[in-house]
Amino acid sequence: MSTNQAAVQAANPNESLRDAFSQSHNAVQWLARMVRSFRSMNSGEDIALRWSNTRHAFVTDEFSKGLQMELRLPELTLQFLEDGEPVKHELHMEGRSPAQVEAWVLVELLHRGLDRARFSTELPYEVPHAMAGDNVEYSPEFREGELKRILDCFTAAAHLLKTIGPRADDGDLSGLMLRSKDFSLEMSIPLLGQTINEQNDRQIRVGFFPLRTGALDPHYRIVRLEPSSTAPNVFEIVKVSGMTPEEIAGPQIAKRISDVVAKLKKLAAQ
Image 1 (cartoon, rainbow, N blue to C red):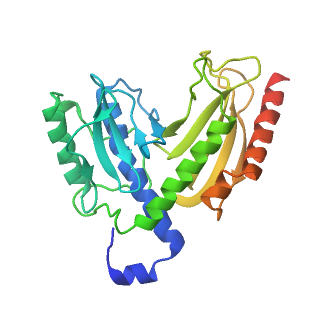
Image 2 (cartoon, rainbow, N blue to C red):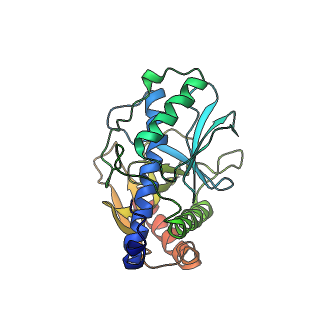
């Protein structure tokens, strides 16, 4: 990633934001690699992470002995968690190449008594504009403004999804996750007659997608999944390109999404 001053002056604002999203998407893959290396994953399977509003971070589920890993925005900082608490030796990714990040991960695994031979950088999917090796570096300080906007967008989208999503019996929000493959923040909603605690494959997913095939194109996608029936999956797109974070989670967008969810629920019940 260039930090040349001339590049700053000539950069297209949309291209700068796309680059910041790309760096974030690439950085998230270190969490995905950790989960895939230490938990049993099916080949080709997407990897679900969590979003923490309080820590402004993407977080793995526990992958070994109370261990988790998080990536904080906007500074792109990696850190291990033990029993939910951050530990020492965080890695700020400024000026770090992917090879240097991998070296840090291996040292941290050694400190925690985990088998470093299990860690793999391979992913079950392709990442657009993938970063690898020593010839490219993360540059969150160079993209600080854009990364703060990304944080604001994810925070806003998470807030909207919370308002329309179901809650489990204990009152906690259920189903909000980040999918590492396409960098989407998603909420699963049960169909009519089902509860959030039921194990089923028929559901509606509402997702915030900042990118489309690597290009900047923020939108919500509402999908009705019917994987065990002959009925096709049905989806609608609500575009939010050019909107502020406040507008992304505003009442007009919330109503449009809620109306689509209600319509898809009725269609599924027919």
